[in-house]
Image (cartoon, rainbow, N blue to C red; front, side, top):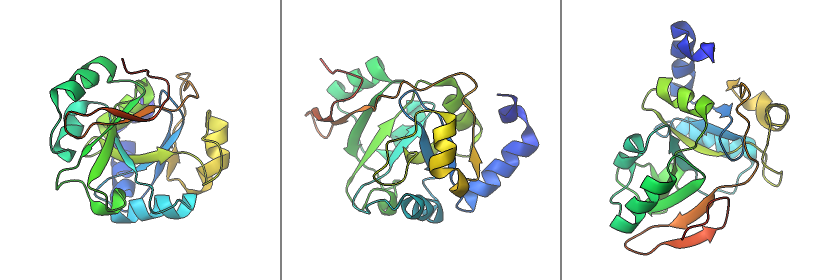
Length: 198
């Protein structure tokens, strides 16, 4: 992972992302693509390259929940228990979004999903990008299975990416994250994935 220690590369990476660039990376679940949440061009590029339904929002991912908190309005005590138990991990929690979260990345919904993947390569990527947060979705074209390894990510989306980062042996599990709505005190599982909420 020496590439993330190369200051000239990190500068180039951040310059490309600031101009609407999209990158692909491994997570603990499946491979993903991402851009800076503040980059409307980047978000537009993701929807275009995937031919993604505009009613399907992107989610925010980071190496630390601290970087994600400004994007949500509030986290209930019950949701905070889940954050402490399953972050980092294969759980996406959907909260009411704050004014910092752009409408164009949430399909103009008033909620946003957040997740902290448990993968060292993704963690290092987030540590070096400006803002430490990516607006993300899976690395596939609409209708395809999500990429589960580096070669599949290259095949699915490689031609549209600024960079496709290797996994350096930190492979994904191939199972999608559990998605749960956490608005108010209610916790409602919308998609059952790897994490089973008690």
